[in-house]
Image 1 (cartoon, one colour):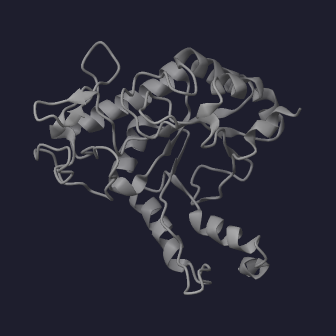
Image 2 (image 1 turned 90 degrees about the vertical axis):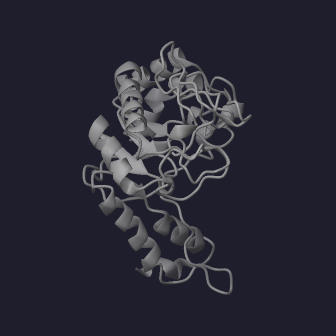
Image 3 (image 1 turned 45 degrees about the horizontal axis):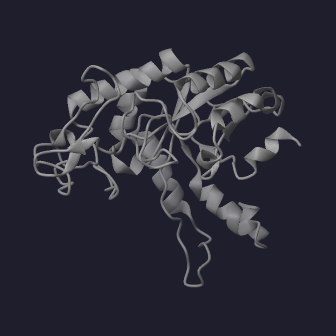
Amino acid sequence: MNSLKIFTLCFLLPIISLPNFTASQILFQGFNWESAKKGGWYNILEQSAAEIASSGITHVWLPPPSQAISDEGYMPGRLYDLTSKYGNQDGLKALVKAYQDNGIQSVADIVINHRCAEKQDERGIWCIFEGGTPDDRLDWGPSLICSDDTKYSDGKGNPDTGADFGGAPDIDHKNTRVQSELSDWMNWLKTEIGFSGWRFDFVRGYAPEFTKMYVANTKPSFSVGEYWNSIAYGSDGKPEYNQDNHRNELAGWIGNAGGEVTAFDFTTKGILQAAVQGEMWRLKD
């Protein structure tokens, strides 16, 4: 069986505003929502490295690497602990090395809008974080949670600069310790693991100026933000023809993030989804 069939539910998304991304580069999502259940996902990907490269793939977006309370990795806790449902740190390094040997760059899924706590404070609130190292890196408390995230915060942090994420504490990206330690962790992912780029999760959760700062502090060869918002729908439940506002919102985020980071083109994705359901006229633009 062709090993690439394991990627049936993985997909390619169009990307807009590409300052450093050329037409000869292809970003491939190397996992889907079920991959964490497979067991040894890093090993499965490693076995297909040469075949992926032969298909013209230049970049592979890998799942969130850190320990998390959710199998898929989007509720991270100990960021330096790279044991997850996909495999362990050694397996991840071997995968990234196999990709490098085949001319493929690895893109890490960076989930930094929110974090899941390791233990409760004296109030009984889950807001004490463990970084995953013997020292105090990323060992945070409630004062580094956004002050208006009242379910978890002690009120000492700064207000949230973006959309709220209800499932876990929203991290205060205005805090200089947060900025420094997250930048250090991302640079460690580059030097220790071999990642070349970043896919920033839920960038609507914090102001674009912070994405700009993290890109400047870590200098990835490629970066892309997940700025997801629903396209406009009409009363018939179908997408409106004019999606300019949605596209302009994406372009605005890229500009406010400094222009060095790209974004998934969810506008085009929504139009394509409608077009292939018998509405090909939507492609005339």
